[in-house]
Length: 357
Ligand code: PMP
Image (cartoon, rainbow, N blue to C red; front, side, top):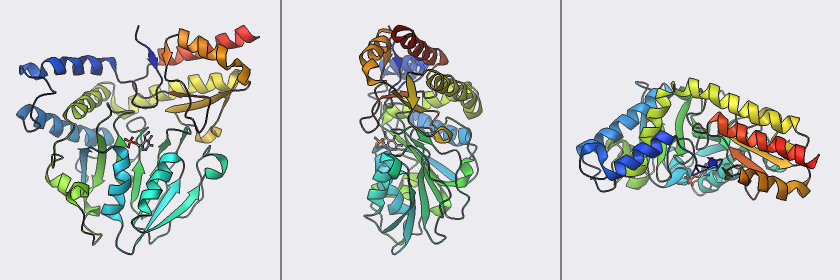
């Protein structure tokens, strides 16, 4: 039986993406070759890469606005390094918002390049909220934030108005909601949550920001080189890029970001509604900053743990354990998660209430 997969990433993808990916492993486009054995320079794969890059910009409303989309290897974590390499000038300064484990990891890397100011942090409350009312220094080369904090289940509802270029790690909520993407200089995301399997990361760059640091940038770390080589400077992750492409096409067929946002809102409302109603559970994030992708919650009474774990496992649910730094439970309800699966979880929560009453 197919499980209801609430894993934080790698995570659920649309069923049709699994099926089409499986087919392409056996025979890609009727070529008599598997997607796993074709050259990245083959006509068919070059077309996938081109279409995928164009589709990213289309779904974000960025076509013809001076942006380039790249699919690179190294995960979102490599962008923690590539961003300062490409934007932080010699002697310049970067500004960061510290909203969780991944934001801190990005800060740690930036500090190796130069002056890095943390404008605000929510570490004081184990990252259960998004800081507000901070000031971004006008002389910063860029401001980096994390739109959705996968581990702590918080999400930015607003992005700052500033003339400083905005850089955003959108790994765990990319393509999940309408955002004015043209406000950003660089957006990046590991594929393995909302966009595809692990093995590739998406980077969307406003091209005019590049080439201004005065640094000598190693080729593989230089966004410009990857743009010039159309995301094929070295061998791309052929299969993860293909599966991501299928997921993006699925998203477009669903009606794009606007349509998926309505579904994501309904799923989040259903699950948070139950967390708030059911006296056995409580959410960990502050209400106004709750993530619509990663729903983190605890049992009010840990004595119910064994019974709850038994119930959700019996219901075919997988991947519900919280991250070790928060404990409890985390239900990741990415784009591909059907509301029916969220309902299964809600039903299990209600059942626990009945059994312990
Ligand atoms: N940023 C965020 C918000 C994440 O959730 C993750 C992975 N969980 C990362 C960065 C790191 O991604 P990767 O493993 O692809 O380097």
